[in-house]
Length: 99
Image 1: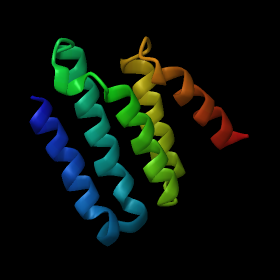
Image 2: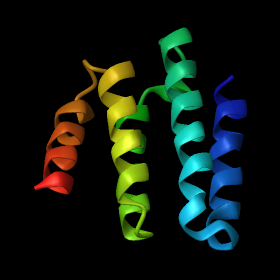
Image 3: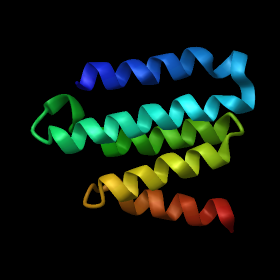
């Protein structure tokens, strides 16, 4: 399941340049699929660092000029993995985006 969810992320990265601002959708879908996999299989070591990965993915989107997509990813992290150590940083980044 983790591999399938990560394939969405690979697809999103391959579509980023051609889609431009519309690229946020595939990234958000990838983040949601990864979070869903982590919820369903918390024992999976391939998903152990997912919170940090989602945080970095949001940062990646910010760098691409897709701040709204980044916020959606950070919000997914907060909603799906609220006890992950990266959740606090996600909340801070959301607040900073709207400051």
